[in-house]
Length: 256
Ligand code: NAD
Image (tube, rainbow, N blue to C red):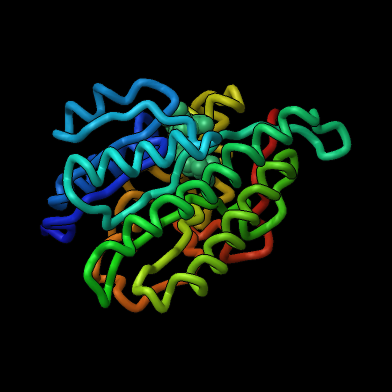
């Protein structure tokens, strides 16, 4: 199924969770993968035959160096999975201002940095199809999210960046899409101190009655990254077990 044969992919936030699962699937699909993360991703990279580069997506220079490393090592960049993100929660009226700024810095500015450095690298590829950028938004980028208002603002912003970038770079043959996961079993869930009973309750806000696994997001990202999605751009696609299909779903806040 080598849908990424000959392609070079950069994955931000690739040391853990959805990013690590996607980096692994990209490698299985034939890509050469470079992982960037603030936490150590050397073990994940070693495991998949890829490379780890320490990178804080809040810093433009770090993201530039990450992309430059992929191009230096492998001669090109075809895919960026712009996935690094953080979660901070609290009711909007009491949201800590620094936590709000941290969310904007990582989840929005970090994604912008990825677009800003990946596009020039992809422009060096021969056309007409020059590359694919996939941004990680969230169901909280599509609907309001009680107790996650600042996070939801950042993920709506990711959808805005995605649609705008798709229009701005589409004529160059670069596609830009977003994935909008429901609740996925990753270390990020630890922010809610959830036990298995809580996970079962959270599962019930998804039509399928359970939370998702990182690999289930990774398979959508692989599709969007690959030429199978050659006419798909500017989309924010939910991979949420049906959570946003009805009007009853609401993201859980702490204590649920
Ligand atoms: P995770 O915590 O396992 O992975 C996030 C990764 O991003 C970590 O490896 C972390 O070190 C890295 N990271 C954080 N700040 C960074 C920075 N400044 N620079 C570089 N890397 C940084 O969580 P995850 O669930 O795999 O999250 C991946 C993405 O999925 C995030 O954008 C998150 O908002 C989004 N998401 C997660 C869920 C969920 O339920 N887990 C749902 C919807 C969207």
